[in-house]
Image (cartoon, rainbow, N blue to C red; front, side):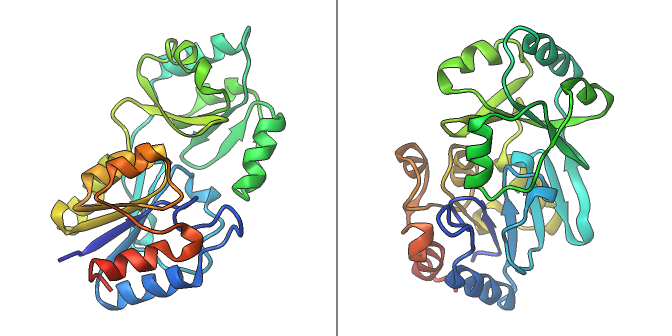
Length: 257
């Protein structure tokens, strides 16, 4: 019996076309909660950047790709930061080979500079306005994630100076860089331990590379029809696209609704 369902946001709950949650998904989540099934967000976004979920109520949030987990009343039950030595190495690397990099901290986010790639992604995600600040400010607080704008052919070079981090790319223009071993699957474990739910009582929905750990980990992992082949291969089931009521259809198929 499913007792908890985890949802990625962009491309899973929220359409890249409309920037909205389909009505069928909103109705499904209301029905899940009426049945006593807990619903959770599992996203790469910072909580302050979640601006596209209408007025849907959730039981908790896995944010920053598993690096920051909260339950009711925004109680933080898990947090993991990037090593200071990696932040120092990033700043040194940027002196000669700069690229836009969003610093994600517990209470704020900022970026060192903007370019066309950043603007494209911010518009695609309908992302809130991001402040531009020097990277050196990251030395003064805990950094939970780096949203880094470089293409895959540069990934090995950049990651070679960040030995305590790993890349979780889900879009060609940027990647989410997190502490090694930090991912949405870890966030799931923290949440279900808090609520006393077993792994085989969970279901997860996703569409991006940063969702693979969660889809493989859940009792039932569902990839959206708009997901890449690698993501689909990691799931137990492939549903329809976000715009074609994929979430609602999968919940019905597995008898969760």
